Length: 139
Image 1 (tube, rainbow, N blue to C red):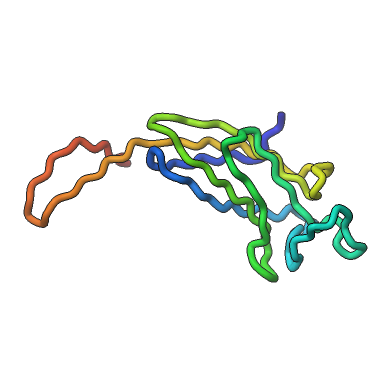
Image 2 (cartoon, one colour):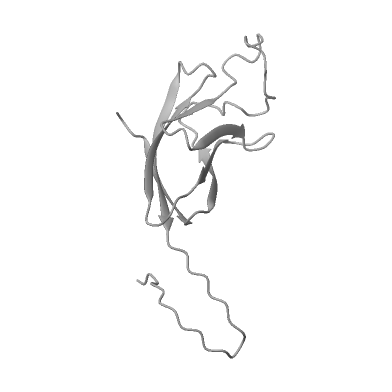
């Protein structure tokens, strides 16, 4: 399998991840969803052929979808939603992006890594001493 792009997302453990990724414009290709309304017909009308984008995911616990960035925008967007597990869980998945709603014209394949990191909540009153071990990445 050829992977066009790789993404890594870090989120606190047991939190919901909602990430929007813009589909890059390829040379000579115009945005697929720009200025179009979603169609619920089984067959495209004469003017909207190829105007739908489809995204497939290798993991059934991850919800993916696609949308236009905004009316008259330059890019289409892929939305990824996932509820993470306990730290240090890492989930690897693949997204297949298609230029049509039937999945016949592949555009790109993305590899995503979803990392659940440990979350440490500290609360204190101003002037109060509170001790806890926290690892902070440096240079």
